[in-house]
Length: 402
Image (tube, rainbow, N blue to C red):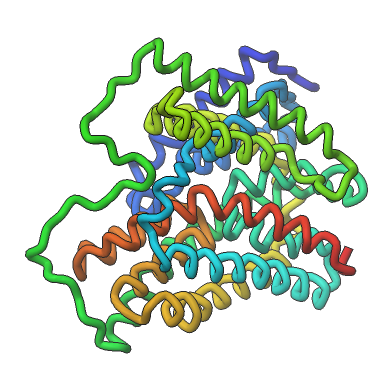
């Protein structure tokens, strides 16, 4: 028996998944400590329930998918709209050095995943999904690329299930290894620590307002309009270049259009983008999108892929630790700031930017502040990583593995 959920019932289900995730996280300390997102927790529980309904009750639940793509694109548009190029100079030389080596890791993650997949004789798409797509890209990027891998010429039906599993594993692993890596570097190289009595407010990524600005109905409509323009132009550009040498996923174009729009408006002083409001819209879009993606995954398809995925993901964790210690730390200054950057890199190199921030906060609360790290990591992790990752993945897809 099949039960179909219309648009409104599907929307209500997505919201219920988020509330369920919030409730469960509030009761389990482990989930709080490792910053596991609400849609991931609620979505996995919902997927298990839906699987049980189908397996033991013969009831199949079908959801309306019309909101899925717009929500995903709105999230990436919000990332673009948050990218203020004028703030990049604050990161200085370290920002560009960090970006270069972060980009190098993306390529290494994909090569490691593909070689492991080929060695085990499994679909190379599994290796790529266990590479930079989910390790450095997280759940959002994983779900976005999963749609591409489900279609021709890849035809990998379990793409979404594999992507969500890999991203969740990476999120936990990124939170586990970041602190120990920084601790090892501080002790191993006897790094000079900042004065703990020198207290300043740590920067908070892109948003550094002089005073709190209220979100109003008028400002909300303005921010929503910017996201809508980014979606419209981004999808039109994506359609125009489809099949050409500039073919990229639609979400990359929406991100790029958002970044251009934000900085053109800033340079011309026509409009000042309200960062906090755009962030709210983006985070809501991502949460709802992930709630839908996770509650509709087919868990049965993961069973036969569990061992290859575990091998690939273990390799990625080892690669991340060695890269953070021997590359990120060494080339970013070999000082305390570099150690904090290494901890942050572990966070978004395996999980997501919030994990990176949590890692760095843990380290700085113990050893002292690192203002450079709190400027560089959000800039690279919240904007550059997704844009560079898209080009790296597109390039890797042209290799003879496929």
